[in-house]
Length: 599
Image 1 (spheres, rainbow, N blue to C red):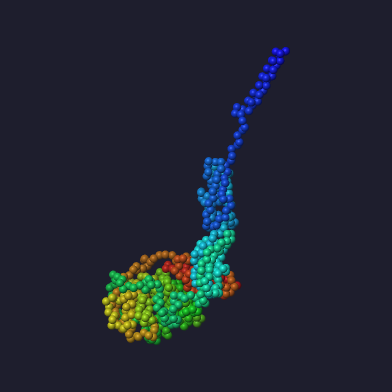
Image 2 (cartoon, rainbow, N blue to C red):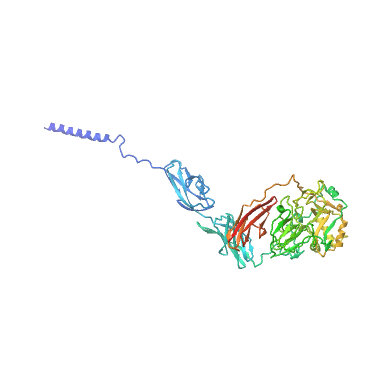
């Protein structure tokens, strides 16, 4: 029995051992728990939500998880690198907003993993208008009443609002760097001007101060003129001191062809003062001029000959303005010279004839800025054949009485060729002789010429002929000097100047002599914009007209306004009116129109 039981026990133990061994083998040779699956690549963008102002870049960062490749591709609204309308982003995550707000004003900046394009993250960007920057206001001084301002600066947004002393002005958006505004000033004093950009992100600029004066406009450089026929300029000399009219040429070299030119003029031709007091054969001697002031109404000028080379009106010329040759001007040059003391402009008409309705007919008209010389377009005439102004070249008794003429004088010669030297811009050739004078040629009285035996009045004139010389301005009798008609001239004394002849003069060395073969070439000004603050108004409503034409030397706005400095003006049409802006430079004129409908 014992032996049997022992064998049974051994068998059971062996079977048990076999069963456990089979269970262990079923789990494989490694043994333990299975490993977790690998983690997927992910991207995190920071910041997640951001407000960004136009003009201010924003830096974004992207973190790539679970990959050794940390590179991402940046997108804006799904476009790699972005676009001008929504903003751009570079490879480093620097986002640059668009120049102006898109609609809607939110964009999505996204980073896409290079290792796994399905791994992305985004940031929502809300775009806001920039903070405006105000650098200057023009003008800085205005009278009480209606005014127009030009606001210069940067970061201006469409819909920007100009405020004057805290009150909103009618504002026109011209560009991100320029606004114009109109308003009405009722009190004198110092007032602040500021600019506010609209929502989203409304913000305001720093302010600048400007002055409001009394009812009269601030004085112009010509405000010291005395109004009337032959009105006093009280020491004012037209054009800047460095202008060719005002430059001394006493020490300038003699032109190499001087002797031949003088020989063609005629060495024995006598000097003749074509001015004085009283009349000759029923006509006033010399060229008259008129000074007008504040309140002189603008009138139209209609052209009968050289309209395409004339400056359009309107200009302030009264019906009673004197004309060269009055009271019997006949078919002469009929020059009319008007100085506008309120605005410092000079208006010169050729073949001027007043009309019954207050307007004028003229063969041509030229407008001159007495503060800043505005040369005519090259090859254009003026009221003078040389394209020169007439008034600055007159010998005026007022200057002689004061003891000095501080500018060149105007003279004529019988023969001229198809050429000019600056400041002339036009020729009216009547000779093919190469020794004939070009328009604008300057001669001077020779330095050794003794003037001590002449009267004090004539010595002033002769000194000017040595210091500033004579500018060839027109075809006519040779060696005739122009001057004004003034009762204070002593005609007998002036006659003594006739003792001088052309041989007492020499030609000043000429700079470039321009002919048809070497005329400078260039473009007429471009008018980038002409904008009205409103194009449909009630009668008499003030409207600001603003323009941009940086290459122009001066502007004339027709009708109603006339010549303008700057780039804006306020009008108040009483009927539907089409305004024409004339922008002029040395190469021509460009025009553009805008219509204001009056209802």
